Image (cartoon, rainbow, N blue to C red; front, side, top):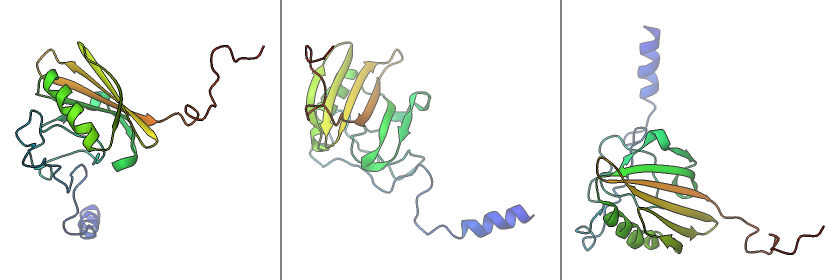
Length: 167
C-alpha cells in the first residue's frame, strides 16, 4: 500500500504537458513543398511512443528504431554513436531523401558511394556523420547513422604524413 501511495505522490510532481519517456514535443513535419517527396516526414511524431529527439538529423516518416543495433550517447544536437533505423521506403528513395535533407540540417557532404550498400559522409561543426543505407530482405531500407567527433588534429597539421616519421 505504501508503494502505491508513493507512486501516486511522485506522479503529481510531473508538470502538465511534459512528454513521457521517448515522446517528442516536436512534429518534425516537412514544409508543404516537401510533404509529397518520398520519405517525407508527414506523421505527427508527438503521438505514441518515440525515441529521444535527434534534432540535427532527418528521420524518415514511419521509421522505426532497430534497438538491437542502437548505441547513442547524449541527445539533441550533441549526441554521438550509432542510430539504427528501419524504413519501409526503398533504398533509392532513402538515398535521395538524405541527399536532399542532410544539407537542410546544416550537414556538408564530404563524400558518397552509391551501390548495393550506399554510404554518405557529412560534416557539421566538430562532428562527422556517416549514413549507411542497405536494402532489407523483407523490404524497405536499413539506415545507420554513425556520428562521432571530428579528429581535432586532422586539419591542424598534428597527424604525421607518409615519409615524415623519424627513425
